[in-house]
Length: 129
Image 1 (tube, rainbow, N blue to C red):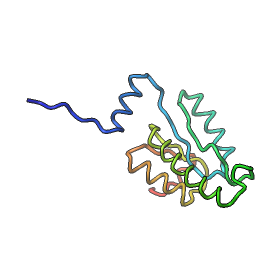
Image 2: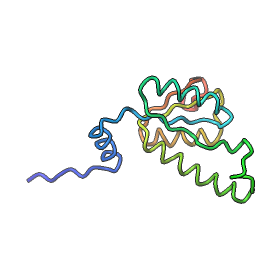
Image 3: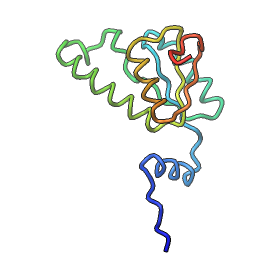
């Protein structure tokens, strides 16, 4: 007697994406100092037929939503969690910029631990190369 195979959450998500005929999803990672480059990458990936997700807040730029330092620190934690969720959702990662800091390095390691392909606009900054 054979038993039905139990799918992992990641396998269930992949199956759902296929059933919905969704295009590939790419998540853009990198320092928010590269927001202009991220917007350009978003345009290019969208033109190529990809669904694009990327950081939605640039906390390096002044804004009332993160003007209070205590609230800003809590928001940073929530945004980091949100970005890891975007990585889980995505089929692949695109790292933008010619610099990889600690946060981006952690995102790259996380994506690779999940088996996600990682591309770079500047391959020379790949910490795994």
